Amino acid sequence: MKKLLATASLVVAVGAVSLIALSLQPAGGKAGEVTTGRSLFDYSAATGNIEPASDGIPVTARLLEHGEWVFRGLCIGCHGVEGDGNGAVWELGEQYAGEHQLPRKPRDFTEAVYKLRSTPSGSLPTDADLFRSISRGLVLEQDMPAFKFLPERDRWAVIAYIKSFSDRWEEEAEWQEDPIEIGEPPMPDVAMVDAGEKVYELMQCEQCHGPGGKGDGPSAPGLEDDAGLPIVPRDFTDASQFVGSNEPQGVYQTFTTGLDGTPMPSYADFLDEEQRWQLVWYVISLRPEFDLETARNEMMAMQETKLARLQNQ
Image 1 (cartoon, one colour):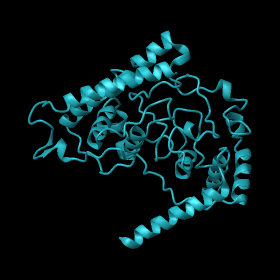
Image 2 (image 1 turned 45 degrees about the vertical axis):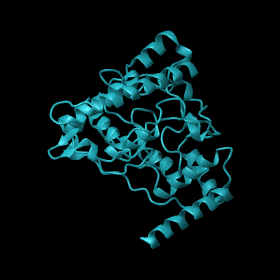
Image 3 (image 1 turned 135 degrees about the vertical axis):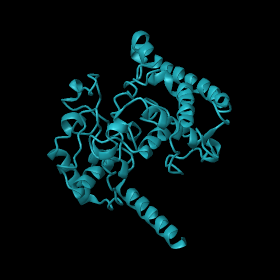
Image 4 (image 1 turned 135 degrees about the horizontal axis):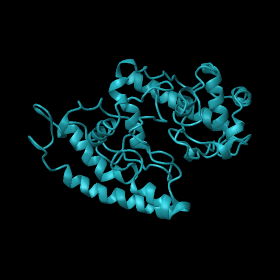
């Protein structure tokens, strides 16, 4: 794994250098021009942020071209020239370094089936969902690295480009559902964690994730994703192994939307909001470092911070 990650890191480093050079070159019209009278360089260049600082950039031929530069510089090694997930990092790892290859095949953008979404099961993600995934990365030190070092406008450009690999974005645009609403997590207590354990048993989560949440349930060895590739259930005891956000809201989102393309279903039709939050806190309680009193104090501190911000507006 370390050898493969080193190779992937080299691809990223070389791509970053290439990207800087490419982004300074004109491609028809004025350098960086996206819309008449406005340059790509007029848009946000924020770095380090997971949440978008802007609402995106209007999609034009110039933006798509810039997005292709970003993709070819940083993404093509894993996702492939055609965006189908058959990049050299995956194919060469499979052929020559099986024990070091990526644990999961890179996303196939031509299928446009995404695990991480704020939208209901079966729906396409929002552009903001894609922005967060690209910025945060997926599964610490294993799957996709974080690209929050890129200027925000470059991240918006590559999002526009990867969407061009699939017709789903145009065909389903009119009937896509709105993102789910996620409120503030309820304050955890012993009763809530105990109730969450009962929900865990009710939904038979141990069949895949195991009685202790370590991803070692009896069904785990035979699980496959929609592409027929083996897939390992999440180890709830290790927060770094969560595919998306491991914060309470992120875990709640996963239980509500499910992970499309995998055996992980949406619980929106089976559990009410209270039960899903109970399950969230039980799953989080499985982490060795979890302490209920500490979690309560952190939540109270965050609530006080938010209240202070509102009062100062």
